[in-house]
Each structure stands twice: as C-alpha cells, then as structure tokens.
Amino acid sequence: MKKRIIIIPAVIIVVVMAAVIAGRIMISSMEKNLEYLVALDVPEVDFSHIPDGTYHGSKNAFPIVVEVEVVAENGRVTDIKLLKHQNGQGGAADAVPAMVVEKQGLDIDAVSGATYSRKVILLTIAETLIAAGN
Image 1 (cartoon, rainbow, N blue to C red):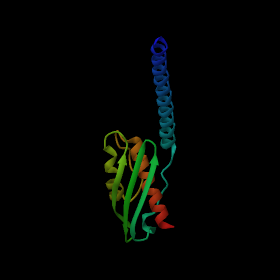
Image 2: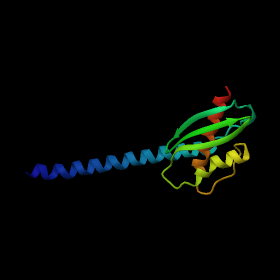
Image 3: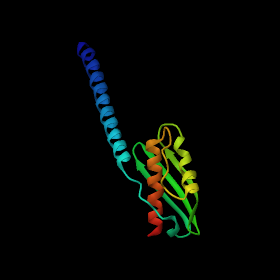
C-alpha cells in the first residue's frame, strides 16, 4: 500500500514535467516559425499576366493556416475569398484580401494586430497566383 502512495505522486510529477517540456518545445518552434515569416518577402506578382480563372491555394505556417480562392478576369484580380483563416487570435487580417483586390497588388501596408496573419495571407495569395501563371 505504501508503494502505491509513493508511485502515484511520482507518476503525476513525471507527467506534469513532460507536459511542461512539450509545451516549451512547441512554443519555441512556433516563435521560430513566426520570426521566419516576418523575414520572408512577399513576391511581386503582375496581375495582368494571370489567366482568367478561379484558383485555390493554401498555406500552413504553424500556428496560422490560410486557404484562399482567387478569381482573375481580364488581367485583374476581381475577387479573393478567405476560405479558411485559423490563427488563434482576432480577425484583423481578414480585410487583407479586399485590400489586395482594391490595390491590384500585394504591397499591402501593415494591419494592426495582424502582422503574422497578414504575411501568411499575402504569401498564400502570391503563391496561388504564381502557380496560376505557370
């Protein structure tokens, strides 16, 4: 009976320690990925060279997941739908697709509170259009 009393707290301590270590590893990985995102440049895309059509693209840049649908007509991007945007925070970056359509370009100013999501959305749109043009 005394062995069980000693073993149970020891097991609980080991499980808690493992959870803390796993959490720290996950947070560290997420921070490195976000730092990498900030350093990435969004490629320039000439919208006038995109063939007419509807194109889908997605990007998973943990912890952010984005899926877009981009419509191109007559050398213009006429619509961008944000089909999926998981980021664990607010939705300030949800305005980015409309800004891209309005500006007809990917050089979008910073969106307050959406540094990482803005970048992932722009990268997803760029990669989708680059694939469409090839």
